[in-house]
Length: 452
Image (cartoon, rainbow, N blue to C red; front, side):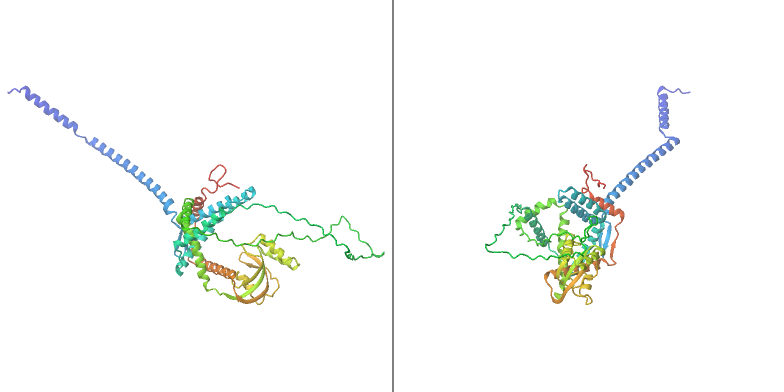
């Protein structure tokens, strides 16, 4: 039997320790399953956090895209093939709101008047969006028709028009302040009667009351019926056409335009507005080029009223010999839609409304007799035709004929089936809120609309 030495025993112990360590280092099946489960849970957590983060980012991104790009780009109306976007509509609405605000800033210091204008501005907020949308449709139709007719506006014409506006503003600012001068009221000096002149006494008719004639005594308790005259109206001041201020030299204009730029909310939009103004004028001239320059005319007197009842009352007053000039002066103090009341002079056929022409130039209308009230658009009129003739039209009649021709074309174009209005309540509210920022202010500086 061989004896084992100490080295053999140590070697065996080392091998046994190595085997134990190897066995200890190996993962058991239970531990392996637990590790797999932990890894799976961590993966699920990471995926969930990533998914939530991605969804949140998508929601925020979609909201920002919809608010800044998608929603403002949505069409709110169509004019034939042209789409009017919400942003385009909102920008125009903002300009109109600021224009109303400017009118308040330029109002007098009368608190009652300013309060009334502020209330008018707040009320205009309710109906202004629809008016602006209709205006945007008109602008699109004007651009389309101008393109068909080859009507264009070069940038130089836009600069010339801006030059006219800036020159007119400068002339107003630099106008000298009028100084008041005392006017001496002349006193009447009695005229001395020449020596030897005896004025002839004025004969006075004296009625002799017979003894049998009863004398009437006024009872102070019975009121005397007298016709109360209408208050005297001031004579209407004639309208004087202002003289255009001389335009600035090119270098002066450049300096003035540079000073204007910081005041503009959007320079390109401002220039487009000037371009559109000129485009409408050129299109008006193009549409009116085919109008006749001579034809039937009538010398007409007219009264314009808001309602049929007002026109009927005016006709009754005229038939009771109340002066027509007095009624015309009253109507001139509150003009309706800018229409003139009074003696119109010679009016060309086509210079007023169709309803006006149908009555004035009808053979059934008797000369020198007042007509019955008739409706022309949203107002009422009564007219009297003094004369009729054929002759050349003056410039004033030709300009009014062009206005009517342009408006008739525009009204017909707006009745097309290709005109659509798709402004939703949500889009309307978005545009109004955006346009109203900084306009409706309370005393505390907040942007809340004051309640009335």
